Amino acid sequence: SRPLRSPEKRMLKLRLLGGLLLWVTTLYCAPKLRTGNGRGGEGGGQYPEWSALRIQEGKTPALVREVARQVALLPSYEIARGELDRRGLSLDIKEVHTIATYAGEAALTYRRRLLEHYRTGQMAVSEALAGKRVGVFVDGGRTKLRTVTRRQKGRGKAKTQTRRYQSHWREPKLLIIYEFDDTGRMVPGSQSVIDGTFAGPDELMEVLAMHLHRLGAASAEVVSLGADGAPWVWDRWDWVIGRVGLDASRVVKTLDWCHASHHISLALSHLLPNEDDRRRTYKRLRGQLKRGHWAQVVLALLDLAESLPDTHAVWTELAYLEQHGLADHLNYGTYRRRGLPLGSGAIESAIRRVINLRMKGNSISWKEPNAEAMLVLRGLVLTRRWDDEFAAISTSMATDRKREWRFQSPDMPAQLKAGDKICPPTPQVPDNSASYSTAA
Image (tube, rainbow, N blue to C red; front, side, top):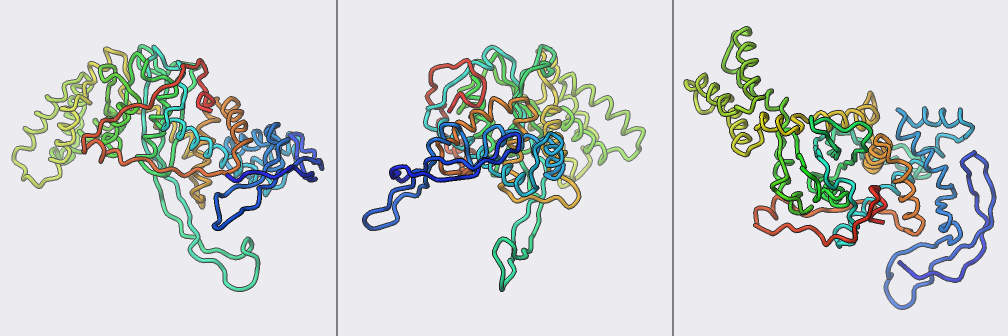
């Protein structure tokens, strides 16, 4: 960033949490003029007094926190504006949208800064998950995004010109980290971590590795990694294990039991035309699978399919079950005895609460930056981490003048196939805090 000039006084508007609008005289340090050839590094000015008070965009931190929280919790911006008005904070819809957009950009920028700390080995490691039983699940949802394909030509300001949009479905990828008890269920009252991104599988897995690292998952009693059968998940688990520094003997990979049972049902739909026979056989094989006898299930299906040609669709289902069985992903009897989760209900619930209840609906489409921000904000507010995490975000953004959130992660399958050694970054001094601020 560019150096700053001596401060000068400016009069600016300041909105308080109660809705009061003030005109305040404060100091402003403009960036110094460039010298020599070339543009040089980019940078903007700064309000040092407001930065010390964590005031950004003419809004107090308390105002930004409350407006963004209501927008993340409620079904629409208009409903959030009405709820704020009932509480005595009268804002028009444009102000609500502007404040929420800034809060989302700040949260995404802060996550990028955390990743930068993580990559350079500057992130402190807490003991939040030390000695605990940790469940980690990932999956994808569906959200409609829109892009501008054409703007109105002719007169008029750019902001008021008519735009033509093209909308398309995208898969936001979500993760959840939580503590489970001796029966494999989430510990009541514990705080989970939910995060997600539209960027891609590599980016999601790096965010997952960062969260596991900062929470101290390497010292956990056991880490259960679970998902459905999506290849993009299973191709990257080993990268996450190496990058976090997890002890392989304390890591269990589990294929969601419901998805495995579904593939048995699909196979039987090709093999048994009679519905009663199919139902009885499915119930018997599903029971065997739950006891961990996956090989018996595959052999029973092979006996039924032995007369079918090699190109028949049933062989795809059998290969799927055999592949995960040989990789020790179907040992459900052992998982039950050890008190490990068998299914991915935690991530399915997270997708419903974070994505489906807020980001899907009739005629709802999002610009990608706004959708990415809503994923992060919803993940914070629904896991009861809002106050602590947003305080850390406000502190970071008080001195961070450039808001950028996009990042690119390494090609994890390529690194694994090349035989590259995946090592964790150098950990810092352990910290007892379990919040985002451990890396700030």
